[in-house]
Amino acid sequence: MTADALDPVIHAPVRLRILATLAALPDGSSLSFTRLQDMLELTPGNLITHLRKLEDAGYVTSQKTGNGVASRTAVALTHRGRAALDTYAEALRDLLDGLPAVQ
Amino acid sequence: MNGTRDTSKMAPADPGGLDRREAARLLAETEREARRQFNLSPQWINVVMGAVILVAYGSLWLSTRGQHPYTGPSLGVVALVYAAVAVAFAVAVKVYRRATAGVSGPALLQQQAEGVAILVSFVLGSPVLQGAARHYGASDGIVYGVIPAAAPLIIVGTTALGIAASKADWLQFGAALAVVIAGVVAAFVGPSGAWLAAGIGLFIAVVGYGAVDARRPRRVTLGA
Image: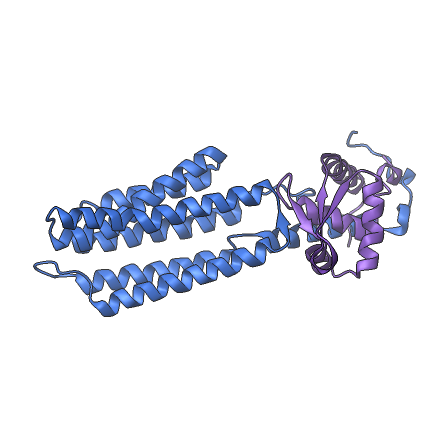
């Protein structure tokens, strides 16, 4: 197995952290954009950019409710996203098994 | 996949420039931190609850030990117990609100419904039985000793037992069962001894649950 086996959509620090954070919630749960932003310490623009890529891949969904200052965006991991993260972790584990230990 | 993977064919740098070890570390750390932030019962809160239980039930037992006839705990001790319960409740609410801020979904609604069920059984169970016992002329030992010490544990413990069974959470089931057993024991050791038995049983259940829960395997993607 080569590094190409790693899903390039997930294999980026910010997107990896987004998925890992959402995966810590129970199935079907969603997290507000602001809480996710706080937890990952990202700027809104940076988070939006990466969420868009994850949404395009079908790994997360986002839903906006309300209008104006009362609006709230909730982000959730999809079943496909959870499966992709599991596959990614499995591939990563296999790759690490083949690497010499770090001194 | 076998144990003789040729690592020389692996790309030295991963796509996106993220090193594999760094990715593994990032994934494990992020999962751990997220679980810590979403955790509704961190270790320290079990310690706080254990301390509150010891202070509250210990004070009630010391206040009533050796009473003949049994008249119940002093008002000062009752005030101390209410204060301790209020502090514990406030701490639990603060932890809950911090952990669930921004979280929504069916799992959260289910947790809230479970919380309401526990609260209702705690608030209503014992006072109703005490009132009925007083109405039918039961002694102070029963009304202000046995029932308030044993009934909440049996009622709340049974409620928690049902919740745990419905979720197949066997650790929570075991802790709830221990609470029910403590309540049953407390019902038969006299009005003063009831506080001691209830306190010890509840302390073991809460702190034991916390200790075992901390060692419970979690769904961690990399197991790191």
